[in-house]
Image (tube, rainbow, N blue to C red; front, side, top):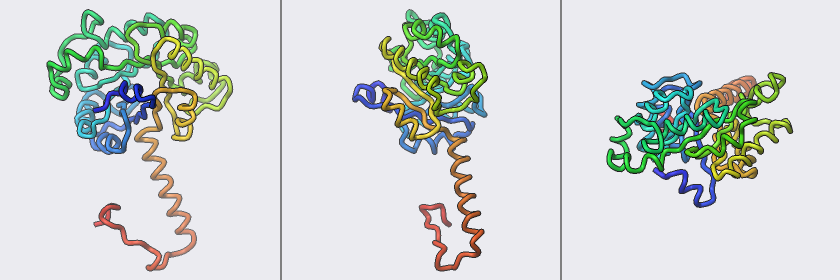
Length: 276
């Protein structure tokens, strides 16, 4: 398992995958595709803690860095995700320095935080003695900036000890900053939203922490690298599944509209393609 800090030390950005489907096999498939980290979305994903734990287990063989988006800034939920195996937590709706400090305290064992000791599954996965010695320095904490209030308190949040980065949720950020004038979504093109995204990046880097952006496409994520982002999330399992299925159906409809194909034009699927 390669620590994202090692990737950053090489001057590279971390590519993060996203899981919203509560299924270990989906998690295993995604983790095998070459991402640097994978985040299980316990906030908006169709899953809960009982789904997340076996998903962490399924990802282990790939060596991907396992993370989770917590359902809220709530200590029990965050600590249980860490105990289940998350090595990074993305916390939604961090609106003030106080919120950020509270979140950071949930990530660290005393004396640096308030985390309760009981790493039930992660102690097995990481080795109990090694995990306890290293957890405070290896677990990553990203505060989400996604509201107008969070933007007003941006520098104070970024300066909070114990945070490793700021994570931008473009959909909620757009709703918050536009007062509902703009529809939520990823990959913003409005100058005001690009300015806000870059302001968050600047605040993170001014305070010596990382900047992360949730993107809908690989093209936009590559653009974010040019802006200096340290971690980019590209789409996610449910969106990728829908897009691939839609493309397959559209292609079939296109070919079917031209009439039946000749036998010579129809390739026989190989075993590698899922043939039997």
